[in-house]
Length: 629
Image: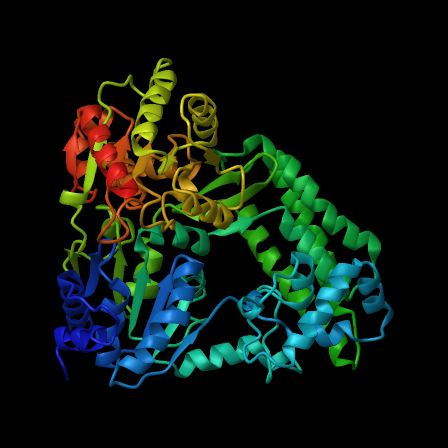
């Protein structure tokens, strides 16, 4: 078998404009060693490393059955549409690969068949749909006859939520292939079958978390798991291992039950629980809850559990020889039973090692029971079962401890980035500004930002830690600059990024959702400005409970690593290619004065540093002159 360096060299030689990347080779060697030694690997690989090939090539060479879990759809699509098809052609070692998504991503053949039935209940369901929804369902049915996968991502048009919900089912609703008359041709089951025999399976991290929560019932047996964008692993696992009860679940359950049960009073009572729960949760949004729960919440949950018991009894009483009727009954039973299980957990009080809180807003609250520590679940579900590779452009220093990686059984590495940050990027800390918490900060920060934007000739991505800060800055800066400013409120994210990239003079003001996943190389982005160090909210209910558990070490283990990681992610928007140049401006004096500042700075790309705005303006003016010359 070839060495990782030889395998990487052979593969990259087939790429146009191939160039050696020492970090890519180093990472490939680390991944090969991890797979051979069954030792977990945590590896930071900066932008431009080519980390996807760095983990895929050695694992394919080694013949390791691998699941790649990605945190974003964009990376999942890149793997499926670009990287894996390329490697099929470029590698001498043959391999099979598959993409596996959650069940609701695939059209349900049984649901489509039911919608063509002549029963009164079906005709009523169709009659209550709008003309557009019915037309979209007809288009989906036509597409189903020719699609090999049934994956909604294959459509070249976007169906409405109402149409897609009518032809798909979630994991809580599906009774399983063995209990469905169309289980054999089922698209979701075919995807699972392909995954069962594939050497490389691509999933999203949320689905992997559901597999951990189910004890390994969803994904095929595998030797290695790669968590790409591993910096979000703790948060995603918290969501999937815990319990969430949103008011909308009652509306969805009522809709599914209505397809089979002709009891409008009971169905209406289930749907009404959505409003009851929302009203009970709204005053507690963003707060932890005591155990036992407040009476207002406990009463709604108990009422809901009683009504679901009535639904279950009514469903059991339905008898029919028709397959479609049996399937509607099974799906309704499955969905109501799953919701009842979660209600039972909530009514029993928080299990040991969990925290109960209300997330979301008063308009869209959600009851959550989350683990304080995801380590035990990951130890049982992953660390003791297979080798794990955790990689990202930015790895928080506390990540191994936060996810429970066993001491002495993992390697921690940083392979750097091929980009010359020291020559092409300048980190400017506006140390002369007031503290961001001071009343005088906003006006001074607006002046600072306007001066930097002017020096850059626009070409600015300004990032803020709240919508309020973004709105105030946009209002304060617009009148001081001669270039257009777009904000996150103006367009959906993809359209906003396209508009920003299309006009070099445009500035884009955005919030935390743009700290990562925004790739705008070239002339249109020369300045990334960040209003303040992005520490997590001190009143976040889950993090506050975790802080209490950690005591004096909480700031060092939770707040500081998260802030450093987020700042590094935001800074990473600047240099996206070997020719990019620019300035990262942090308008928070704490980056230059706080005792913890070096912990933050060490997490950033190795840029030159300055405290003087004149240095930043001169560098931006030089870049602008070169770009327009």
